[in-house]
Image 1 (spheres, one colour):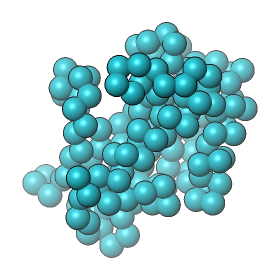
Image 2 (cartoon, one colour):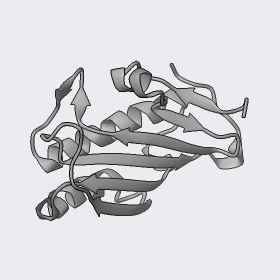
Image 3 (tube, rainbow, N blue to C red):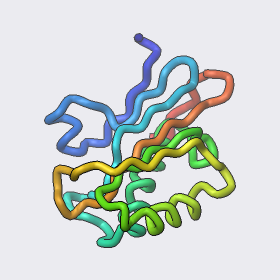
Length: 137
């Protein structure tokens, strides 16, 4: 898999747990690891809506390093801790993706590594033609 490109952001968990923020396969599929609202070691945004927006911003930053953006997203997954947050998280998703309309899932989970987190998102994107673009970083 020598044609696989990886985005590493320097987040401590990437090194400690041995993963990349994003991986681009030669066929143009880009997989972005679970992203939360943790920025510089702190939770950015307290409520479900704000955490969702910030989590997707982390994912978009990884896509940008591969020369892709929101319009290239074909699938999202939102892992949430409370059914009561569905509307706020869904509203954030709609604001970000209404014109894109990726396939999407929202799954209720028991919790995250930091109990203050209420959402974690994953993103899959696709580069038409399956050709690697030039990274921007």
